Length: 261
Image (spheres, helix red, strand yellow):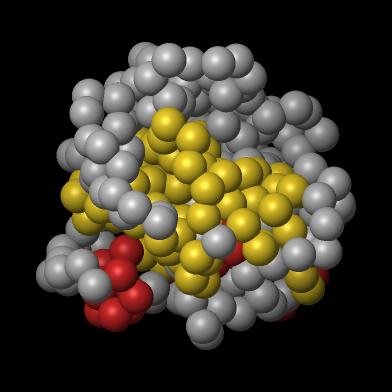
């Protein structure tokens, strides 16, 4: 079996990484067995088109955490040179009057991001200037340092990734799904690389992230607690999805954004 990181490479193949027990990790997520979100009901959701230094582009998700900062996964940024970000988007295949499109070359992946273990998978894009907040574009609150483990809590995932498996096209409209947080011990039965600074969600109902959803938000009660990181290669139904646990990285975020959490 394989695990996969969840960005979509538009001009190059999916990256895969060998881990214990023949599992592999590749960067590629989607929202599986979800539904189309009510347009503009998730105003902090961001759509990232990353220009790669080696050529080509990849797609990831993200979230607006301040008028000048977009939170995403490190694996979305480490090979990038510039990012085009859609804010206030719903259907990314057509013009939208309420959508903002901004570009930035200020990509800040975590310096300790490990491609093999997919650890420290967090990054920030700093915008050149503040964006104007409104009902279509707004910021999300982040989990606090003393947040619990959320085990058993109902959570929402969202993104424009693949709807079924990595061979499908990515979704043109924002998708969302509800799922449940599981213990890291349970998650390790599928992914031996899971660590305390990650959080996992159940896959038995068939709902989860897939290629293109990387970097997107994991939400409980309108608070972001995770960043979409990896799942099985092929986004197999029944397997969990893993996320970077935000409460473990608030110090890093303060150091790299100047914000206070």
